[in-house]
Amino acid sequence: MIGDEDRAWQALLQARSHDWSRGPFHYRDCRGRLTLEKDGRYRAQPALDPAASTLIDALAPLVLPNGPQVVAQLGQSLDGRIATESGASHYINGLVGRVHLHRLRALVDAVLVGAGTVADDDPALTVRHVEGPQPLRIALDPRARLSPQRRLFQCEEAPTLHLIGESARPLSGLGNHVETRRLSVQAGAVSPWDVIETLRERGCRRILIEGGSATLSRFLETNALDRLYILVAPLVIGSGRPGISLPPIDTLDQARRPPCRHFSLGEEVLFDLDLRQP
Image 1 (cartoon, one colour):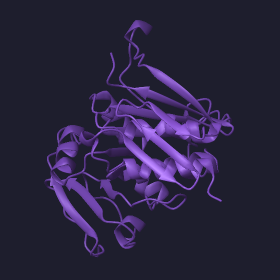
Image 2 (cartoon, rainbow, N blue to C red):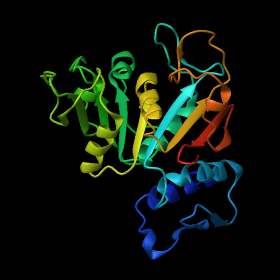
Image 3 (cartoon, rainbow, N blue to C red):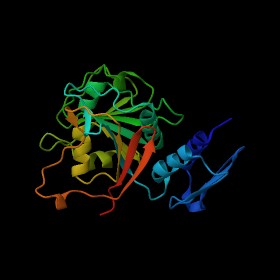
């Protein structure tokens, strides 16, 4: 029999494409019904168990009509590290955290990583741990320095976009599922807002920035993010690569203090930061 968490996930998948102008979203199955309002409130008959309730509470904002459009996800240790000094990051977060990440991928239209993440991790960026659609995969590679043998460029599980600088030479030997687009480069970097505009031109409304640290930090620094999920695992690495690096500030009253919610995902804690609020 389908469990509450599976029911909640099926409801979110269907709500992803709901026409909110027609009113609330209603999900029904043999177990009962769930109604999701456009402001995020929901009710279920019978009531959902705690894990399913957490799932709805944490991810429902992504499917709402006025929900965040550019979201970032960061998995880190208690001391704010996303990898060791050598770049090893498999796996800071456990299976529950990876399931959460794959749910994020399934709810967005596109998932983006920087060239460093592709070079270090060779990610597939597909939805494997949960049921759901595959997003458009984007590799942000201004200098076109990546090897064409990376999985993104050879495995045809999902369409892929290779974003390179205007003067970079396109890679050869890419799969037929890969499209290359050029963007202008200033001071060695591509503007996050140019990336967002390019993806919106392709019909991508919901965008996930998955890494790495430099790419995510640049989106955060330029106020290009609507929401940031930080999933903290109970380990201390002690050294290594920080999750976020921003220009230094002098006093703590200059620090960002966005509205925050938090959820328990097994032994890990998910922080949900609303960056659209002052």
